Length: 243
Image (tube, helix red, strand yellow):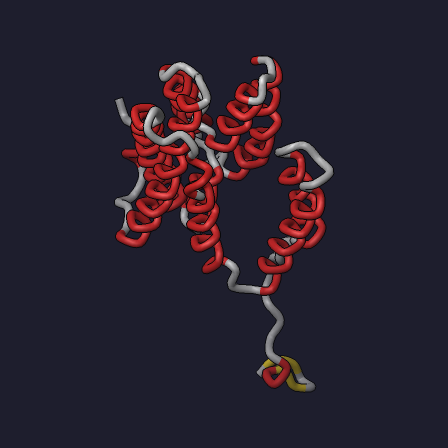
């Protein structure tokens, strides 16, 4: 049986380095999640099972926050689902990467995260997109679940994980990876519009909705380049036509 990642190219050194950095940052957050869950009185199996089945750090933290605050399981699931609605357009963006048999599409959907989509969309060629997606997805799934298990084991010793500021490591690494991609004014304007929209709406909307609203800011600024033959430079055109 041919696995989907066997149809990809060999991951390069730069891709392996970037994926390793993201896995390191994600692992720190995973340890924080596991330790926070256990320190909050949850059974050890709950964060481990959630990480295997859900595999969405933001949604897991949102659901855990509701439970630790005394909310019902229904409210916790609703909070995580709301935050994960941003994955719907993500799936459209990497639809060409996860094509194939039903189990390939199912596995690809499970591994669709902010990081795997970001790595895939940075590539131009289809084979490179598949390589980036599956390399990041498999490595990140492994690192996250191992880290959560370690956090559960250390939960009795680390009572207040928020005091260490571990959650700041993850967005900092993602920002460092995203900055090199902002090479033109169109990309900077689109990202700036989305960031301003999300930040402005964060105090007034529930978690997850500001990210969705930011997509409208991106769509308002981003315009696809027109296809066709580029016009000739002005000094190459004479009264009789092109030289």
